[in-house]
Image (cartoon, rainbow, N blue to C red; front, side, top):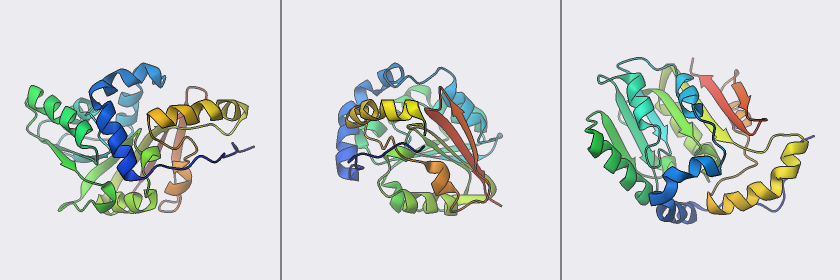
Length: 217
């Protein structure tokens, strides 16, 4: 039985970016609050199938929590591109890049719905960002166009499982979503079916967290 959606609505981009601008300095402490298991980010990055010399795009890179993992995967000969609409979050990411002297990390402040890269990439990564997107269809299409043939697109996120636990957690998830803007009812695996015949979905932590992967022919 699917989780019943209440009156919850996704927030507009301006409100989301304003909230994350305020949260940026403290976002590194959010992991325990959202029960994100240690190693889950690395597991998701592994699903990208990156190799040294690749170029990877992270949509909604935030404060740069995944940059080290992505850079490790592509090596010094590869390129990591991070895009985020929140200036506050990107300011933290830029500090991280400067502190480590990463020369192959490029950060862009922009609404991903308007993203237009000069060259295609080998992989696209959404990490706890897909559920925050307001115009998912446009962003997903942009990401798909940016992906080279044979490339992988991975969505790592959280949402309410379609079971009794999901129905119990619904009100709690909506409260959390007011602090960390996102749609707990999002189902990226359904959106991915629009552009790919094969969607590989793995679920973790009682079904709350998941990793979805598709490959471009």
